[in-house]
Length: 229
Image (cartoon, rainbow, N blue to C red; front, side, top):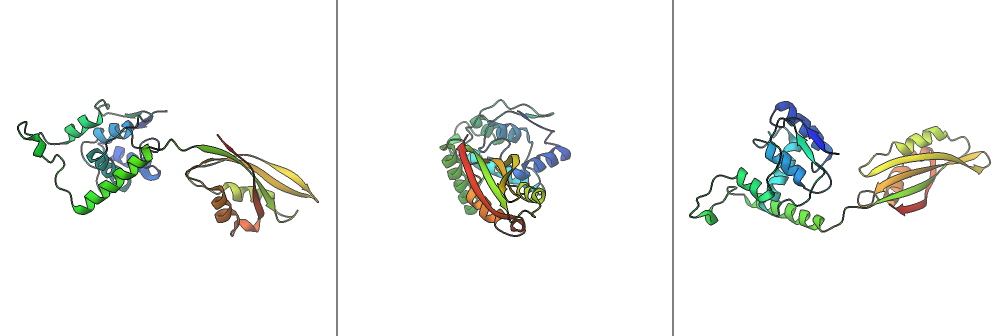
């Protein structure tokens, strides 16, 4: 589904963009794409520093343009009241840069002088993007967990709430049911879908279910099934 953003050259539009980028590195997906270029070119100037997330994103895209460029297709983006993105990455660079002297354009620095720190940061970001573009899109897995209470007096509703209250990027809780294990004790079986590169099931159990306050309800948690999607 295409992303729709308000006019990014207004205070309201920039605020919306800044809020949108609070939990995202790019306009869509896990790599810089033509969606980022569409929004980048729609901006008449760099965002104010008070828009922390938008500024971070803008500087990152600027660094990519100076190094490796943007290759991913994206999912589609519409920026209201702004010109739609048509140009390819090299043309965008030309639009952003001052006009060059035709007789000596090879000696013109289109982006001005950079400090050593800026150059190093740009090189590190470019290396990171190049490495990530060589990888396939991160896979997903479906995982079934057995979550066992301490005894038959454990509040199973609270136990399930404790499990579902664990939130992290790449983790999605699914269906659940209570299964009798004998002596009036029931365990919780719950499905979850994870993005493999973002979530470690072992770390999830160790960091969230084996510590307080979760262990007030949870005696143990086991992986019953683990399937790639």
